[in-house]
Image 1 (tube, rainbow, N blue to C red):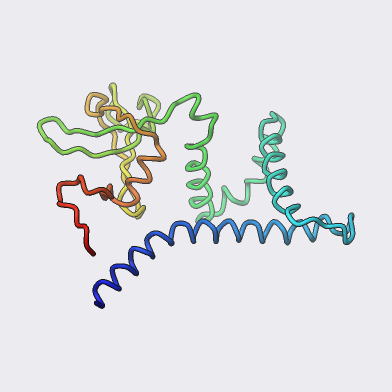
Image 2 (image 1 turned 180 degrees about the vertical axis):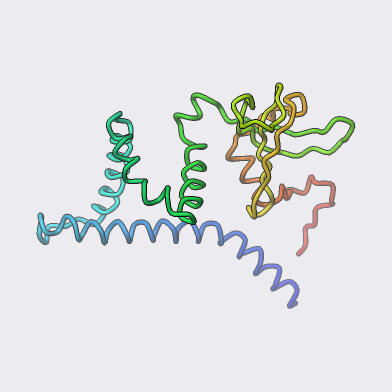
Length: 206
């Protein structure tokens, strides 16, 4: 009896956890945006405040920031604002890593260099490793790297505890018909199967 209850509990937890976390993060964002909106807008409109203005203000601010970032004159100004974040030793590493990660998924970069999910296969081995091509050429890398028709492949580790970037010949990789989002989501949970077609018999009872 206890075993059945524990299985039911974990099944319910697995079903509720993603939804609960998503709703909680949305609640935090809405709560923060509503608080900011009340502080910014209420001095101008007084008590005439409609719930939801915070969300509208947050979305409008993000769109406005995107419009500003599209202007050429913003680049030099942004470089000045980034000086404290790009010169402090520890902050520089964190900021640069986050900026590069965000730029990798930017629409502008995707149009210029589409992201590709690949299976890395070493010659003479049946081993396959799923990764993402992050660099299509290596001739612009510093001296010391092997040259030739090579690519950089990022290999994410399960449960997002890190990953490796390897430089391999292009012939070692085979494109996979899968989006980057699907590949990263599957890697997050170590490609665990969620169907009964993984070779094990389906169980109808808990």
